[in-house]
Image (tube, rainbow, N blue to C red; front, side, top):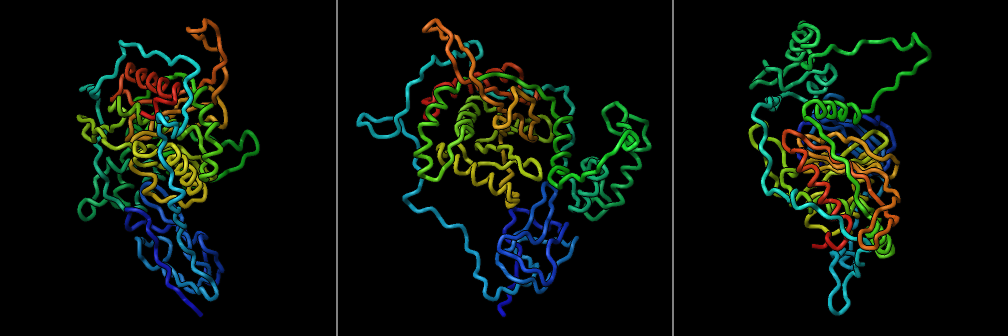
Length: 444
């Protein structure tokens, strides 16, 4: 019998995460990559996969234990089972090269000329190369880092308690369960409306079964976590949404002409990959969109890197993987990473580090439908771009003096009005329209 001790794999920069569910028992036969337990940090829940196939002979941890990378968690009898290796590396022949404009000798990618005049950007809304000032009268949340264990954080979420407003009585100010309970009791003792801090009464508790048959369906862990974050983001950041349309006719023609070449490289070339390049170009021109408001509410943290997140729909809910250094990658590389991260997200194998560090988020509903929507900012980011389904519309061509059928992509840009004003919101979408109308601009 070949028995191996299974250790916690690399789970990112988090330590002492809590085990909230054990998915196997002694005697179970498991396959490589089967989920063996679920852990939860203060930001997300994730499953730990089995590195080998075999039979569970001993479980060394229990629900409630805290573990880190390298912690022993179980013993596995791997008799007759080959170890699962890491994902094979790409050969040198499959390394993707960047798009390059045509050379005098005819080498490189043949980028077509635009078939329609590029949209004009009015000179009176030229880019401003400085962040907008924040109004001095705006009040901000303290932003202090709450010192509490994952189990206490989960307990606080269940009660709707704001840990940043609770003073801990434990060692070094650590928040205890009794502290959370005392804070909730104090809030409930306040007059109606003050407890929730928004000046209106809480929603009534209704027994819906009195009106007819009902069914109770538990929310997934991801929906519980993301729901609390979305509520916080919506009420803490004053949202404004700018709607616009971009002519992507020529871009789509070029993308479709590259599908065969992309397929040979094993890449699914989607519109979203081009959108990411266009967004980074706009972020360079408008640095206040590539920023976060400091915790003190008095400074704007301008980021010199360009990490773009994208909303990914999974069976358990919405997650936002992040593609790093988009400015340093070509469209083929971005498309490859989009496919890989989306697959990991759907299989619940996405590491926590892959969902951190984003500067800007794109949420695309074009594959489903709709004409426009109001995406919620993924704080501490200050803006998010929503994409709806493109459709053919008649557009006036000033050169030919006639209406022409053009493929128009609806854009919905939500931004934090404490940081970005309406004029810059319009400038940003106008810049995106310019980038997307002429594919050659993405190569500059």
